[in-house]
Length: 41
Image 1 (cartoon, one colour):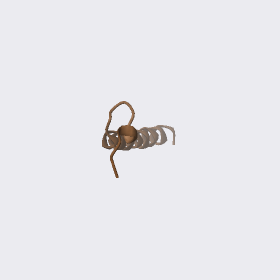
Image 2: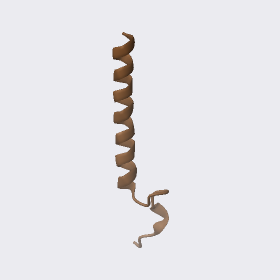
Image 3: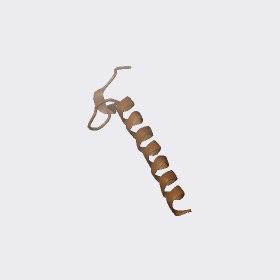
Image 4: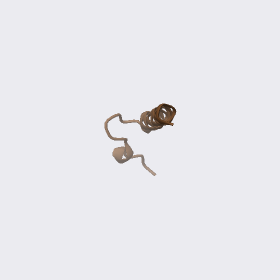
């Protein structure tokens, strides 16, 4: 089976960069919701 470049990730070219970006974004959302909850509870 030959490897083709059709499975490259968009923009960055590596899926590991996307995984890190998504996890960082989710952690940021959790942090922001936590701050929001502390301020308005």
